[in-house]
Amino acid sequence: MTQTDRLAHHLAELRRARGWSLDQLAEATGVSRASLARIEKAQVSPTADTLGKLCAAYGITMSRLLALVEDDFRPVVPARDRRVWTDPETGFRREVVSDAATGLSGEVLLCHLPAHQRISYDRPPRPGLEHHLLLQTGALTVTVEGRSHRLQPGDCLRYRLDGSTEFQTGDSAAEYTLFLL
Image (cartoon, rainbow, N blue to C red; front, side, top):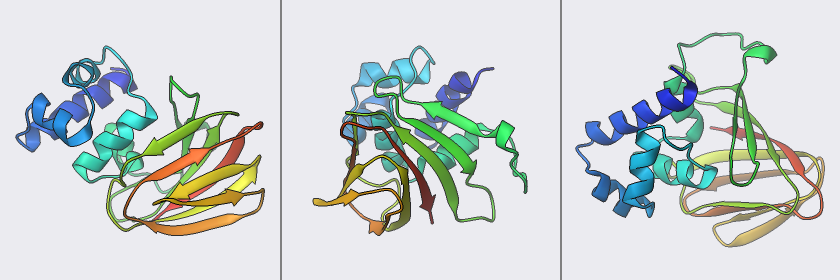
């Protein structure tokens, strides 16, 4: 079974465990019923935007969702074993350095957003989720609940998230490390 198949199966299980119909999930996420059905059947891979909306509806982080699709906790995560997910729409790449695991609250992600791209999330997967974003290369504008922050390499943006976020690049790609607590 591929990771896409496991993700599709897990998303369907999350919905069923809550007793939600596809229509109810569509209403909660703003994603069409048809798209949700195709995702749950592993006919398409969800975009970062769609995964963000699903995670918000289920109250879990994207890392935790993806960790639930993987096997069990390991104290050492070798670089060669890191899970990488790429948004087919924007090219946004998310590499899990230290994933969500039972007994641990933090997560560490390496992210790459290509030049001239924008990704946005309507709401956090869990209200009050703490973020520490360290920009490695490029320039990145992060808008947190309507307030924009223009970051340069070496800058760290810290925030608790209760509303929307947007990540936008200009002429160059952005590489950043994201710590979630």
